Length: 256
Image (tube, rainbow, N blue to C red; front, side):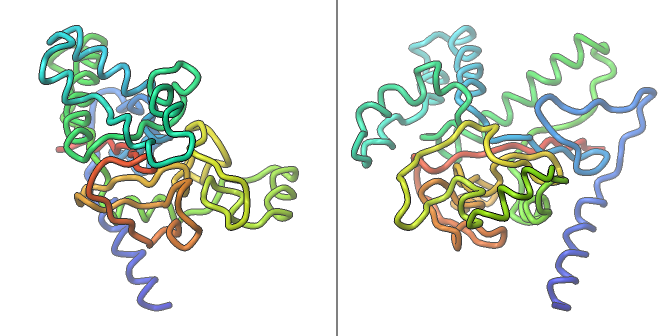
């Protein structure tokens, strides 16, 4: 117990060490994020198919659909081919509008790093348009570290209504997340805004898709294809390539 307490204090110190930039106006919350501390933000959900389509659309417009930049950013649709209903998902999961709100999968660590760089530049451009080019703060989007991810994941649910409390009380804990249930129905991913948010207002930190962290080859949180033991906050899942169960979310860090 004492060692866990020390670890929590250490993690909190890491977050609080980010010093807040003092602007004439308070720094607004970056799009799609929740605030953890004054200059550190986490995406509310996993990055979705529609988010990635926006990225591809920009690359296509800037460089052309036959360009290396565009082609190298496309998801690997073949990650679904290991499933019984493989062809339907391979053809539709990323491309069909019905799945726009689902987490993007079939992407590599290197593709995610490129996306974070692109997102940083585009949000800075938006800031410059709204506030002037001389007033753009120094910030970046990136993958969270293992420590950062664990801190926000180990917080419990938001304050629940009585109805939500009853629903959770009467169900096994596995049914509160999109994870593999022994002997139950077989599922894949769920929409990014599914299940209950945690106290920070973040969805699907556990289950749905395992989330890449900044340490390459390590994912956290488990997925629709992992059981409860793989999905607890301090568990790690290894990966070597894109998968149908692997996705990500970003953090946004203001840098002094």
